[in-house]
Length: 403
Image 1: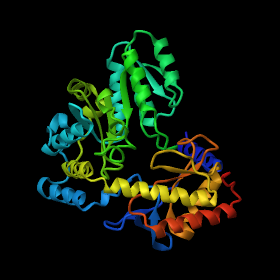
Image 2: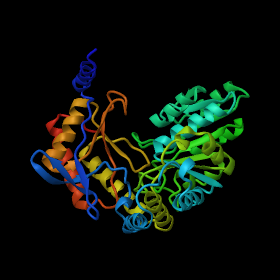
Image 3: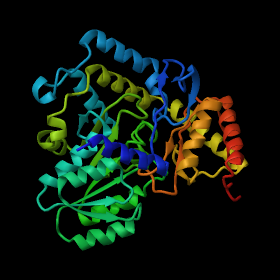
Image 4: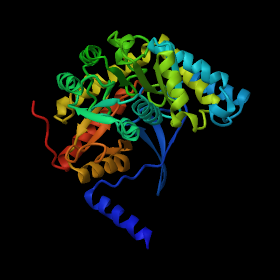
């Protein structure tokens, strides 16, 4: 059988739909963020990145960079294997203590990514708690969906951010052990969950509450503990999951909760037991980033100013973008071919990098540019982005927002 023919046929179909994804060749430069070098057919050029999840530019922060460099010099590069075989490095334990403190929990557990932490934790909870049922928000991330699927536990979907629907479905489940999985900030629409109402429903039904704060940690709360910290609800959540790869500017994922919960996941989760641990230098850099953002609110305040400034400029031009209270600005295109084309023109003609977001990340017909302004974007950067979008909106005959 000619497998390559099968592969190419499906790739060709993806391209015909406008949903084929190509990635720009970018090189980040320390001290220059959000400017990066784009390697292209004609050589190289400077581009301004507008879609990074390094929301606060902490991947460039001198203290974070220095912590990683110093730890590589003292410990070397890798962790030497899984923690199950190679043991804990001291930097892993320091980081887990910092994370537990960040969320006001007894314990924390590190993973190699936020995807893995969701997949491992949810699959373990669902498979190891007898007769468990997992109630999942309909908008949950793929990592949560995969973890739930892998657990083979019964799953019940509840309407996105609809705590009343959750309440009805928890009641219908009855006396079985219940796990409610949801996010605080949803990455594509930027909407924020009604966490207090969801928590109250969970408490009323004796359900374990599981929240994914990956797009919120570092960004919200007086110390960067996320929306749960901002709302004073962290102590009422059973498990808070987060990432080190977005606002903290490094890489890795984690869970926090009670000592017994974290030890349970550590002892039974294959995604932890059989995976090589994060390098000590990564753990040290993440610790430095978390410590800084616990003390400093300057990055968060500057980032919010940039978001408000860009939203106001888009409104003046009638460029449609989804309203939300988060740091994510989804500029709606609604057509996969035009979305790809606009992204390409922005990069090639304007030196602006915004990756198009299409199916299956978002439903067909809701294709968009997902813009994430950061504290280091200047007024001139915003002027150039808005000017480019205004020109392209006319060129592509796209609909304007109704005032």
